[in-house]
Length: 164
Image (cartoon, rainbow, N blue to C red; front, side, top):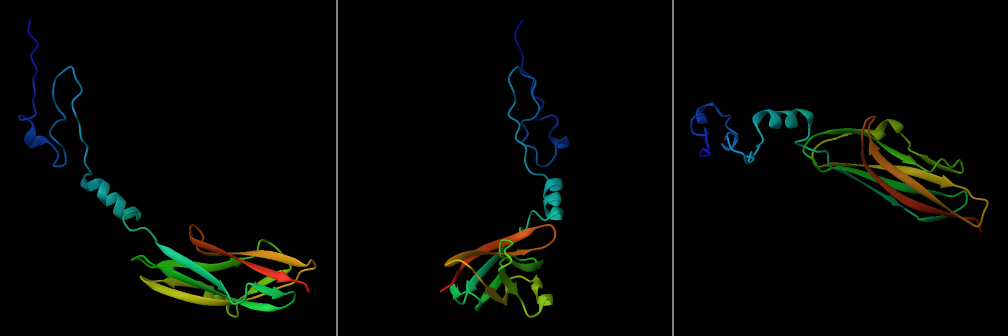
């Protein structure tokens, strides 16, 4: 008895999905090369979940002075930038590693909650004061732009405090 290979591809072409490659039906002993392509349902799901337009933000931080004397003040300028096409809601936060000998304050904390629109930047200026009992202490300042569910971007800088 002779082996016969039946290929029903031409017979069912009118019933196939428009994103099918046409090689998904054949009665052979070998595996047929099935090529799946992105259909309209997957594209719609990506658009609805926001995967089609990722958030792209940057944050930079510049200290007016990187070294200060114990008990002195300096300023920290923080700039958050939205490089994406969609608005982003978040808060600018500055923390100093839980140290109680350094304080970072902003004159109007209500201005730290911001909505960044497409290609928009905002700059906030903080006052930083610190003390040390040793000859020199380095404090790492962590800066972030985030909301309750997502941390969009982070930066850090180091402030050295000397006790002369």
